[in-house]
Length: 100
Image (cartoon, rainbow, N blue to C red; front, top):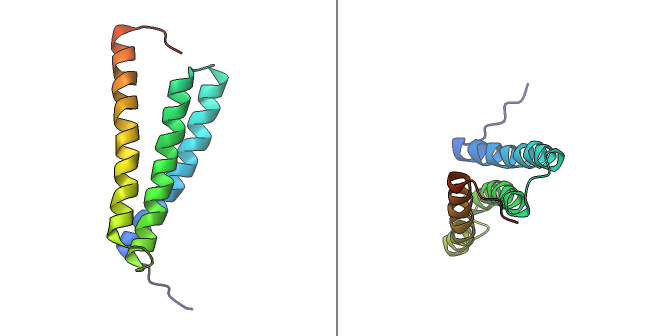
């Protein structure tokens, strides 16, 4: 029997990728059935994509394929995208308004 050793950081990266895929499938299916607004659907897509890409970039960065500058730039791009959307959705839920 051959044992394959995967470092802990890579296991976490693979789990992030799997979690992103499952999140996209489950959440988009439920939102499609309930006819959720577009901004919520976009937020779900961006969040799932973030998990998948963060996992992939972590694997590539640990293997030395990409530099930390590219890794940081992509992560910050996602943060700057997710932050305004999450604030909007939080405010929308609190006020109970219907937005498109």
